[in-house]
Length: 448
Ligand SMILES: [Zn+2]
Image 1 (spheres, rainbow, N blue to C red):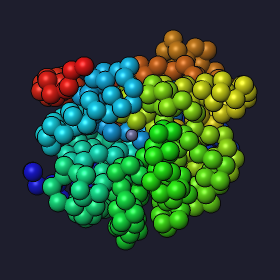
Image 2 (image 1 turned 30 degrees about the vertical axis):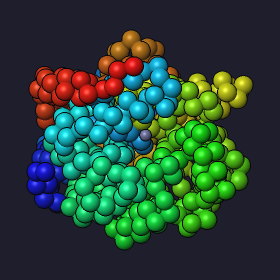
Image 3 (image 1 turned 180 degrees about the vertical axis):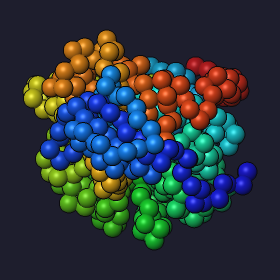
Image 4 (image 1 turned 45 degrees about the vertical axis):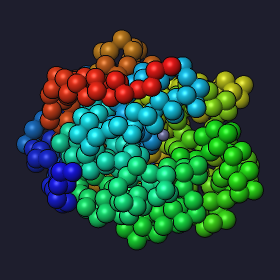
C-alpha cells in the first residue's frame, strides 16, 4: 500500500477574486431566488450574489450565456466501481451480488484508484461537486479526489471481522483511515458499516463510537430489499430500523442509503433520530427492489432526504440530472399524484438537502455569500434547456437538461471542468487506464 498523502493539503490555487457577470443565478437560497446577476468569488468562497457587483476583481467572466447552479451532491455511490458498468445487468439481486462479490474480491488498490478517477471524471462532467462514497481502499479514492479536485465524503466499508477479506479488523481500519485524512480540504473521511446482513451489534456500535469521537459521519445501506428486512426479522425478531434503534445506534450525523422498505413506525424513528436518507431510485428500479422509498412520508415526518446514484453497476450512470428525473417520475406515478416531489423539491434534494445530509448546509448546497464556491455553469443555448426562461430553468434541471449542457464546474472557486474538459487531469489517460484495468477485472467474473 502506498503511503497516503499527508493531511492538511491546501486547496488548489485559484485567482484571488473572480466575478461571473450577468449569469442566470439559480441561487437555492432560502427564498429560492432566480435572477440575472453577478456572482463574486474570493478565496474559494462566494463573496457576493446580487444584481450588480461593482467591486474590482482579478478576473471577470462573461457568464451571460449560462445558468450558474449549485454543485450537485451525490449522496450515495461506490465511485471506484465505474470499471464494472454493465458487468451484471438484467440479473436478480442474488446473481448481481454474486458477480459483484467475485470481482470485488480480486480488486487491487491500484485499480480502485483508476476506477475512482474515471467515476469522479464522470461526476464532475455532469455537475456533481460532492459525493458520499462507501467502499474499501478509500485511501486510493481519497488520492483521486485530491488530484481531480472534487469534494469526497469517503466511507471506509466496515463489516464483521469474520466476514471480511480486509486485512485486520475493518472497523479499526476505518478508524485509521479517518485519522490519516481528517482535516483535509477536500476529503472528509468517515466510517461505513455495509448493512445489517454483514454487521452485528458490536460493529454498529463501534462504528458509531469512532464516528462520534472523530466528529465524522456514519454511512450505511438500510432496508434496500424485502429479503434483507425479512431475514433480519427472522434472525433478531425486529425490523432493521427498529433493531438499530434498540441497540442504540440511530442518531444524527448518520446517512442511510435506500430505505425502501419502511413502516410508519420506522419512518418516525428515522426522522426523530435525525437520520438522513440517500434515496437511490434508479438503482432500486433496475434491481427490481419492488417498492418505492417513502420519500414524501420521510420528508413530511421531518427527515432529510438526498439523492444518490449508487454505483454504475446498478444505475448505470453517475449523473444527478438523470437521478432527479427518475426520482420525480417514480414518486408521481407510484402515488397517482403529479403534484408530489416538484421540480424545485427535486433540485433541493440534489443540492441543499444533500449538503444537509453531510452536515454541511452552512457551507455547501446553495449560492450564498460565505459558502464554498462549488457550482456549475450550464449552457443556456443547449437544446435541452430551450426555452431558457428563468421561470422554467428549475424544471429543465430536474427533467430535461443533458449532462452535455454542463460547460464548466468549480469547486472551492477553482475550475475543475472548463468547456467540458477536465482541468486537472487528462480524460484520454483516465480512459486508457480504465480500459486496461477493466480488461483484468472483467476476466475474473463468473460466467453464467
Ligand atoms: Zn450502495
